[in-house]
Length: 396
Image 1 (cartoon, helix red, strand yellow):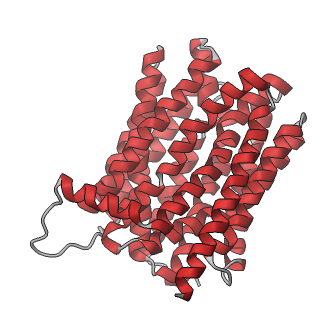
Image 2 (cartoon, helix red, strand yellow):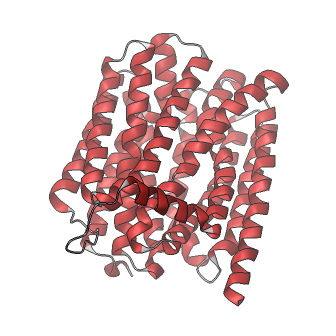
């Protein structure tokens, strides 16, 4: 089965494992680092993530057009080397505006290499192989996510600078792999002219006018708000309110990563007989359950269980939704479609944690999790409606 994937696929997978290991050495602990380094209140720390999300939102809009216009490979390389500089810059950050600038920089560069990678995968894999291919890549990314926090928990306890250098080096290595070993996969015909701004806007409008694509994007955004609460708010929530230290908390994201590594391919293969849109509502139900578990828990194992439950939902929906988008898009517009779809995480990151802070201040510490369950339930309904839409279109 694995022989059907070209060598470029495996080179990218190696680079992905290296880069994700490096970045997750420090990223889960970055808000803690900023808070302790600068003695900032939590509202200021949370605002750093907002800057990062807004920058990522902007870059994701542009990245799809860039990879379709300038090529997947060059845009990937720029993103990797730019992100490496941002991580190296944290070593020398001492003021709030330093962190703001670096958060914006990392938010701008990260979507470039992620969208370039997604577009290359869509180019080199057949439609029937894309779900499996995206699943393998998610498994590779999560090998890094499993290793990174464990290594980071050891290294950063004594030397944050070493951790940031390691993250920068990992991104540089992936950038070198991209420059010297990957081939460009964007198909060009002789005499092809670069698109003007009007043409780019037309293509974006065309993508958004694709009703199944717009419907999926809305549903996925709702679900990602739940994920944003787990990945951004949970660490601060469990430490401040229940005394769960960073060394213990690191096992929660590591568990998520290990589950993806060992279960993703099996679950994806098991779901192959079903329609993409048929399994998405089922996956979203796990997000609802995870929100409720956090809302009623007061011990580490309850929070750990919530991550386990949410991860099952992630295993079901994430690769399925990405492949659904890639299959909807015309070959020369996949970058734009994937770029627009990539906005879901940034929108969720901008909305979820901020809203959770308002709810916490107004209604208490547990209210964001019950609100998240309601949002997740809306995602379930939206997925069901999408499945009905696609069933009708296939029967017509």
